[in-house]
Picture 1 (cartoon, rainbow, N blue to C red):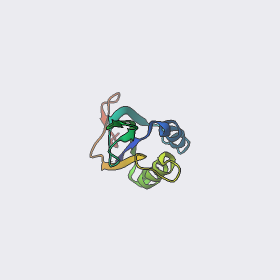
Picture 2: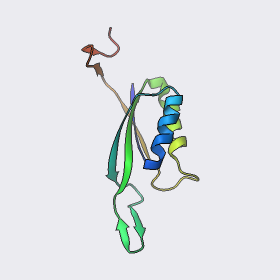
Picture 3: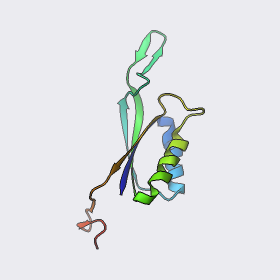
Length: 109
């Protein structure tokens, strides 16, 4: 399994959730976060906003679904023409997972 962590603009969250659900990926976790990336914040007049509001999504998928989901996240979250601050996608391996209700390791019955 893979953990896809996407950090996206707040305006991309609802379209991304809809696109994921339409593709059959309804299981996600999300957090409102504040931070900055390569764009180093933004300047509005004399005021510099060093950290910006973003949303972080966690999506766990089977290995074979990873490429399609990453592509879907990128296509959906990218602003028109692509702009600095659109976000980032990280992919990590999931070594193990457990279902609390059944007290079982996932993949074992």
